[in-house]
Length: 269
Image 1 (cartoon, rainbow, N blue to C red):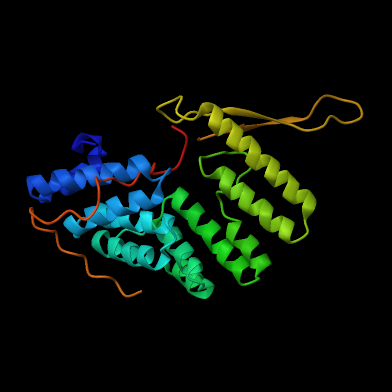
Image 2 (image 1 turned 180 degrees about the vertical axis):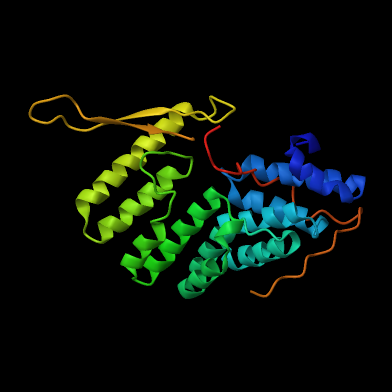
């Protein structure tokens, strides 16, 4: 792994570090991105090493939070997410914070965390992820009807499919199933499958917004044409940040890694 393997936006955040520390941290963060899906534990060790050398750099704390979450260390993930929010003023990871509270067995605190977030400060994908997390917290408390209400947001549009639509549709279908509304549940599961298939087929094929036609086929009536419809696809106490280690600090883990960059609006591009 070389520093150039790290996403440019993340590399830019590291420019305040001394050159040799910057190189080490870049390599650790690049390793996180490379191995997190196959070996979350190894990715976590790289994230720890990066954060120890770049404790005041937001991307290092964000990466550590994500790897901690992936390894089930919800307390550490929550602490790092709070620190990241304090360093950046960003609420981008509210949904992850809600899930961390759920993982710690505190669904009431999870709901409180979600209620504190200002929807106007979240993009559409973030709002969807918060809705799904809040719905899960409601289910944890046995509040099934409220769980359904959490998902009934503007983005729950069966005629438009974004990258987050399959998850939202499937979550909605699952709650409907829990409520015994099986016919509606089946319809939404089908919509989730159609959206996922369309996104898989066309993902990455276009650099700009592309409207895709998704044919929804219903069983034909006894007589008459097949019914169809088009769908367009747009595709906590804060922990004090650790100070940067000196250039000659003893390495704590193997190479570095970086958290994967997320698409701002979550749409197919």
